[in-house]
Image (cartoon, rainbow, N blue to C red; front, side, top):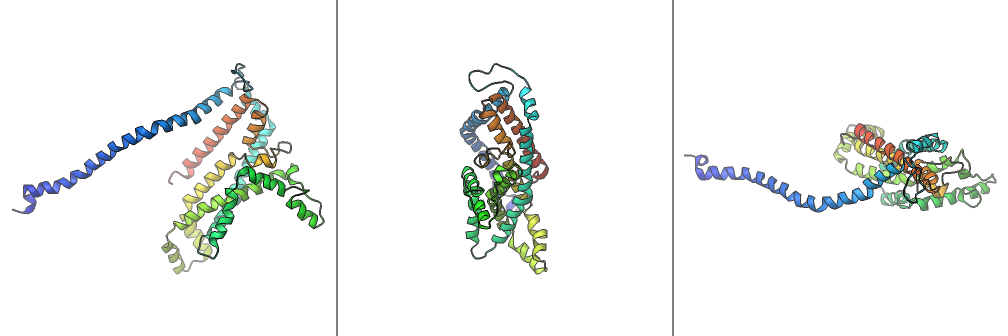
Length: 313
């Protein structure tokens, strides 16, 4: 009789097969105390700080209310009609679109180019990473105040350079035709370091043997980037574009110290429009309607982008 037919041997062989099943059951049971301990506080905070304020904003958007007392003057959809009849809101939508386009076409490619340059082991790579990432660490309000001084035609850096060459100093932030382009330059300078660090992390995750194989096959630097590096960075590029789009729609802190939405509402974004036309004018119902529109736009773009471009990531 062979050993495999012996009762002891058969029992010993079957015992390890049952052990993983018991281990899986124990792991499933061990998750419940963790869920019961941590999930209710998180759901309560999310409900109190996110869900309820969103519901209140949607409710207040149907009232003509200044924020004091209980809203009583029901106006229905009038606040939403006033939003789309306001020329400043149309300009805000255009400005947000310009920021999105500049972020995708200039900021993200610039960050990718710099990441490929300093991701290799060159002398001073860490120093350059720190220098390029430093603007992102700076607070948005502080960055806006610094660049407002830089753009100043009387006492700023731009005005000083113009005086040095004997030219008339420009006042870019005071001109309707140039103010938004000046802000775009600040936006690109402020946030490209964040995207650069994303790309550096993605480049470091690429297997070096793949790049070495491309070198052995005689691929040029551009061919190696286009055919090897860029396809392997696909998920990182899509994530970077997602952050750029969502961040562009929420831009507020940096514009307020720069222009405050002026001159003549030429640099309004959707968030500055909400603040200037809703909060500062004590039109809480109208501002709530703007917030609802902004929320719908952000959620629609975010979920559509993730569903179309990031469904496999």
